Amino acid sequence: MNVLGIESSCDETSVAVISDDRLKANLISSQDFHKKYGGVVPELSSRAHLQIITPLVRDALAKSDLKLNDIDLVCATAGPGLIGALLVGLTFGKALAYSLKKTFIPVNHIEGHIYSGFLMDDKPEFPFLSLVVSGGHTLLLLVESFMQIKKLGSTVDDAAGEAFDKVAKMLGMGYPGGPKIQNASLKGDPSRIKFPVADLREPYNFSFSGLKTSVLRYIQKNFPDKNIPENDLADIASSFQNAVTLALVKNTKRALENYDVKTISLAGGVAANSFIRNSFIELAKTYDKKIVIPDLEFCGDNAAMIAFRGQKLFEAGMKYDLSYAPFPALKEDQYSGS
Ligand SMILES: Nc1ncnc2c1ncn2[C@@H]1O[C@H](COP(=O)(O)OP(=O)(O)OP(=O)(O)O)[C@@H](O)[C@H]1O
Ligand SMILES: [Mg+2]
Image 1 (cartoon, rainbow, N blue to C red):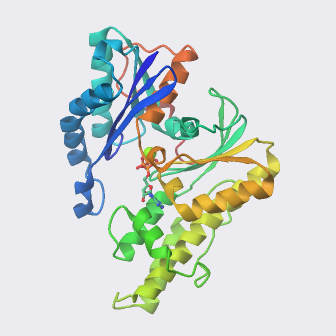
Image 2: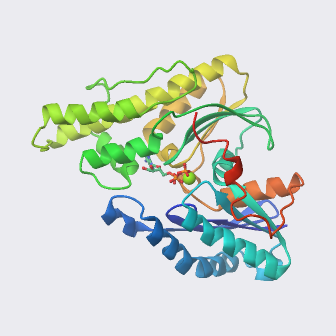
Image 3: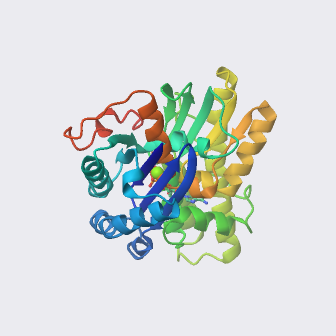
């Protein structure tokens, strides 16, 4: 079976092909031009998706040695994400499936992230704990099968990735902030500044808004002229990154003590962070669990995870009527809020 996956929920256009369960192509075109605005501009994002999607589908097919007609199943992200951006990939996918008389499956972007560990050679084993840490979500989930996901907790305010981006902005590092904070942290001392780690009544929920404010207050108090020497910048970045990591590890530890899982799986853009990756490798060792963290190409937004998830839904018997409402995944956005 040949599956075409399409992702366009934010600022990455991506097209992937999975043939007989093997990933043949996963092309990702990132919209770097948003940097100069300090964040993603939705309308510009939609236009850029529109320009690149056709050549990207052509290139992905060529890389996979396939023709359009060889595709059996078309899958596209249907939400959550920026509405205009989503519309491009979703409508393109639906139109393609309609014209080829092939099946179309809409995919929830977060479920794409949750199962992204299956793109690795060494796959998660059910049941597993999934920690999705991305630009818009911070979720701790108990995943029992391809059809059973239980949400244990989520952020009550900012997502972890959002906190990275906002703190990087405060430190004058630019967008996207995650990789910049990680780089700056390399020379920093993670224990120099004790930034707060939220401890909420709901044991698996997260909060990063207080941490973000605390970094802001620290900068205002110690560097009122906003002139931060390089070594202090490194220590602030490193201490902030450490506080985020402690929060993620703390709740995951609690879940490990209460749920008998085989694997811990990290997913989402923030899972690209090497400090967080290493902390979770240590955590898994301590609890004698398998750890699966996708390669960097599958942490951020990518269509391989959408093709994979779509195929699993198709195999489970999901049917989709092409004339149905435009955003099928949004009505069941069970991953938002706490
Ligand atoms: N090395 C890193 N360290 C920390 N954060 C990182 C790193 N690399 C990327 N990020 C963060 O990952 C986020 C982007 O991840 P992703 O593309 O999965 O999010 P999204 O698709 O925008 O949100 P969602 O998946 O919730 O809809 C950004 O906030 C970015 O700063
Ligand atoms: Mg994402």
